[in-house]
Length: 530
Image 1 (cartoon, rainbow, N blue to C red):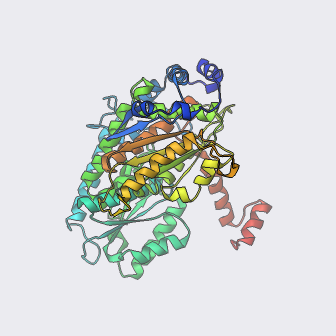
Image 2: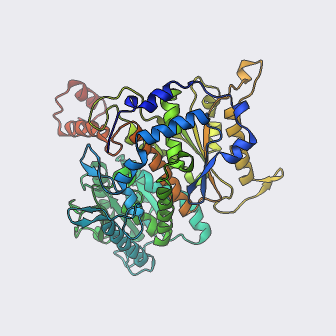
Image 3: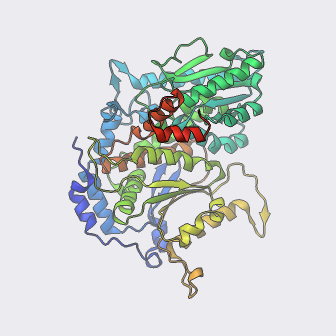
């Protein structure tokens, strides 16, 4: 497998020779283009690139780039268990979590040190599925003998953002479908106000806590664990009857009698890619039932399978990734906005911030040498229509062009609506979404500059009928695969995160009372640390 810096490829030269100005969408964005410029993204979703500024010349050059960088070959190597995370010398196996029969998407078994990892992940899935069913049936109870009615996840980063986003995405759907079992809450921040507030809301004698730390040493998570244990003990409850751990088999949390049970992942599952492991699966199975979580896995698997297609016009994740490369490296757009027109996806942009920016926020290639081109964009977002009344002003009329990624659904999750002024609220939501796509693309001429919209703002649209578990799984996998493909293009290691380490090291020095840095000591002093 050959890994080459992006600017050393022939495709880079061809793309550089193309006109690098935005398109005139008034001419480009026809009804026919809207109807035909789309591809299946799995889970009942479609990816539309009609309002993206690419035509045959750009698409042909991007296809040549995908072929030259062997993006599908590298994806298959990842799926089959080759060492892709060069920084930590690890496999990258989050796709295997949602494989079929313990096999990779390619149909192969993945073995490490004589261990069949697909079977291991499948076994853990069945273990926590059975555990969730026993809790929901009242066969596993709290210290006072009460049934559990509440679940709280304690974790940070990938142990919080993905699972929280997925829970919120399905909360309304589950309520409508009669799939609500345990009410879920989350504690992530080491700020004690976070844990205190959640502990005050959750009925402690009816709450099971899911402690998530792969290493078993995450400072914020262990601090919050001790906070909750103190609350439980003061309430006269045995913490060992109220806490389960999701961790690695080598961590101090594993097989520890201080916990009701432990469920396992390994070092081949990165934090921000762990939502389809026990990290997300335990709390989602407790909240909605293991069947719902397995539907989510099926949607993700469908998207993973579609991502094997070499033709970029038949591969939604690959096409999305390559258009993003065109916008980032040749049009010079440094940002991407994620704009879901679904209240359920209110925290999905926050998850994608970590997924994208922690993966491809790199200035060196897989070998540790500096690259000489732009890599991952700044990612931000908010659900519509809230964002329209917030930062859309800059998106429409600011000095920077920001590519947009819209997500929308024809049906609401709860099917609870009211008609006002001739239309129901879901119809108004969809009308706003359609209007924003065209407004960003085509703009509006006006002799008054304050009222003029230049247009030329490109956007994509992922859409489906309803946000359900299968659609959500496909949506999650789409963005995971998009980020992966872009990392391959840029010759990055998208699967480590050294950028989070320096702050951790300095924090420990501050807390030790011997930082050795006068400026650090001064900041610590004004903040009352010492």
